[in-house]
Amino acid sequence: MISPLAHVDPAAKIGNNVTIHPFAFIDADVVIGDNCEIHPYVSIVRGTRLGKNNRIYQNSVIGADPQDFRWKNQPSYCTIGDNNVIRENVIINRGFNSEEGTVVGNDCFIMAMTHIGHDSVIEGQCVLGNNVVIAGEARVGQCCILSSAVMLHENSRIGNWVLVKGGCRISGNVPPYIIMAHNPASYFGVNAFVLRKKGHTEDQIDEIAKAYRHVYQCGTSVFNAMKRIEADIEPSPIRDSILGFIRESRLKLVGIPRDLE
Image (cartoon, one colour):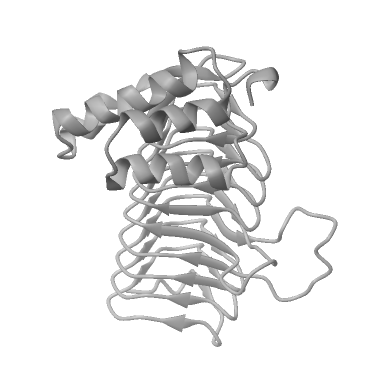
């Protein structure tokens, strides 16, 4: 299942039933899990760990050197989970600020020309459209969709179940369950279609919409919006996840005017 025209370093660890096509490059200190398929002209660079059942398409570079002046050839890593599809010309840089480095979780679909910077985390079950650019040390939550040409700036954070529309530039924190659109990025409603499709109830969606009316549509500060959410909505995992994200973000959210933070 490994082409004689591929370069596979003897120190690489290759799992069972792995297919490596001609002209792929597999570096030393690479681990590839069972049932992966590596297409022609893919490079998998040292420090990369691939889980099971991943498919990586032509010309992608997984585990490229970090693009950061702070990196001085110290150990750096890229950790890819299971069941991911990584399409053509994707570049994922290794990270050097944690043991796992740059992380892509399970069940992601990463489309062509996407770039994921050093030490970023894509938590899992995400779709990244064509030409998405994610800078270093950013974080994307579970079940997110970043449409084509979205740009996520360094240290930005996106909560779970977020849809960011095409071409949107995100610099900051996007709370869970919502849609972001336009430039400058602004609140575009609740991500109701995807939430319904994945089993959230109408009551849960109404609860989310009510919370974000306080945050984005009442013209009050984020601090006051949190107080209103606590008074207006019964405690629940969804309510608590929204409030928790806002607290962790120190009340600084994308789409909120500076005088209302």
